[in-house]
Image 1 (tube, helix red, strand yellow):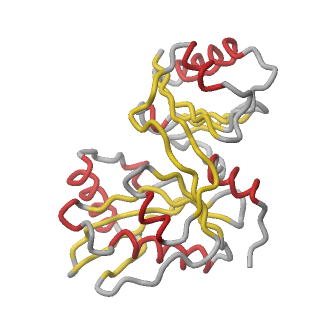
Image 2: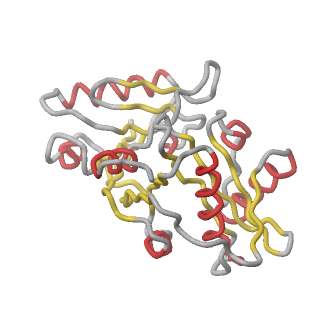
Image 3: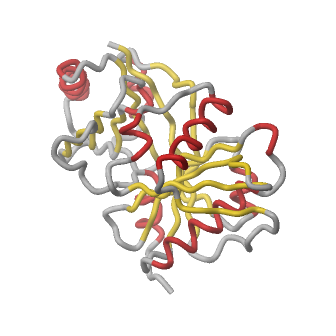
Amino acid sequence: MTTITADELRDLAECPVAPAPPPGAASTRIVTDGYLLEIGPQPDPDMNVVSRLRLEGRDLPAIVDEVREVYRQAGRFAATWEVTTGSTPAGLEQALRALGMETNETAAMLALACTEEPSSSTPGIAVEEVSSDVQFAEVRAIFEEGDGWSPGEEWLRGPGFVTRFLARIGGEAVATADITWLEDDRAVFLGGALTLPRARGRGAYRALVHERWRAAGRRGRHVLVTQSEPMSQPILLRLGFQVVGEISVLVDRF
C-alpha cells in the first residue's frame, strides 16, 4: 500500500512532473518558483505548456511577457496555460483572460488518481509494450487514422521516460496509450490514449489501463494519475479513478 496524502495526489495529477529532458532532446523545461514551462518538440500549443502556477504577489503582466519571450526565442508563438485547483492567486484564470488568453480547444480537464487496481484484464484484447520499429509505425498509423495527426519521430519514441503500449484485437493494432514515469517514484502518468473509432466499445481502452497498472507495479509504483477529457471520464470513473482536482486550459497566442 502506497502512502500518499490528498494534497500530494492532487498535485501529482494536476501537474505531473516527468524527469527533465536529456541534453539535446527536442523538448526543454524551465522551472521557477512561480511556474513550470515546457517547450515541446513541435509548435503545437498543446505541446508547449505553462503549469504549476504559483503567482501570488507577483506582477502577472510581467510574468506573462517573460514567458512569451522565452517561447518566441524557441520559435513558438502559442502556448497553453493550465490553471488548476492548486494555482494561485484566486481569480488567476480571469486575470489571464484579461491579458488576452482565450479558452483552449480542450477547455477543461479533470485531474484523476487511482491507488488500487483499476480493472481486470479484458478477454480477447492483447496488450504489448512498444519497442520495435514495426510497433512504432503501428502507433503512428493509429494516430493518423484515428486523429488525423502524424506524430514526429522524437515524440513517437519519447525522451526515455515514456513507455508506449499497443492493444490488438484479432492481431490488429487498434489502440495505443502510454506511461510517463514521473519524478515522484510512487506514481506514473497515463496519457497518449487513442482507440480507432471502428474498434471502440470492445474493451481496448480498459485493457490498456489494466496493463499500465501492471507495468507500473512491476517498478514499485502504485499510483496512477491522469488528466481526463470528457470522452474518457466516464470509463475511468467506473474503473475506480477519483477526481482529485480540476484544470482549466487557456491558449495564449502572441
